[in-house]
Image (cartoon, rainbow, N blue to C red; front, side, top):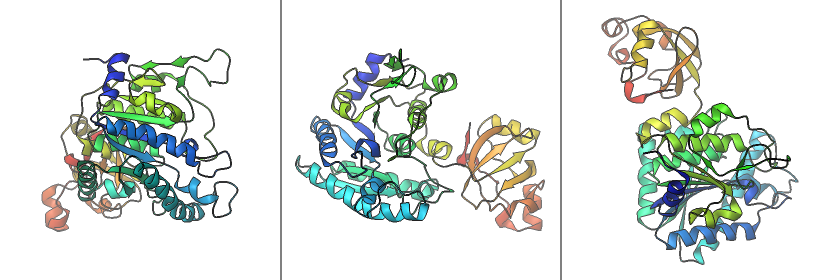
Length: 376
């Protein structure tokens, strides 16, 4: 059944498990320093939801923003090494503030720092899921952030908007609330005359194809409105209703009030594991499938075998995400490669029997197994 706006608002208010994402710009002063008053106001809203029976997962940016002021930087550093060092300092400062704020309401917090690489492999993925489930069972508020001190540019979530949507799927959340420094989605930049607030988006997948969202990100954070719409899309295809609004509206949003922009889910909940493969990290390379293999992949539930691979593009390791393309270069699917990119050329065009005979039994496996493949 298609949800109308009132359905989405009610679903958020009644959510048994809710993921809330807050960005750096919502937690810091204009100078870039952590704003303790803003953080405490956010925690008050989350604690109220928890006291109503909701299990809250907080995805919080702010480690770099919290760290660069105390280390003497006037603005967010631009080089990766310094950003990662600043994040190492800032994460502790950020968590100390959260721990103190939540303790006023009798709530305990637990820190979860992850990278995309941690979660695109099945074993690590299950470990993250089990840890989060247990924290929630214990009444703890998990505070999740990408591990900025360790994440590489090659494999990372890139922003916590996407991470929050994936986390909502991982914990089987009933709702996602995206908090930012803009109070809603608008028909044009809010500063422009005639810009109108959009209160409800019934199909964010179609909306992303139809609208162009422009505007700079803040000097503190890494995300913009496009990444938030992308997060709403991930939630929508996961069967999860979402609301986007400003951090000052966190309480009303969680109570189901008509603030911000509500997004209806467009699909029923599917496999969280397959969603992670589809959205968690950017592919490192591509495998070009011949016409027969492309048809089999498009049909669903078919592994990509070496006999149907024409070409390998890029450099990647076994377990890395890759595109599966047809001969025209069109993306058909994303999947986890079963082999290093340098191993695959010797396998091209060979059947499983030939692989076992000439290269050994360890090569007689799909290049991408169907359980690790998601159509796009």
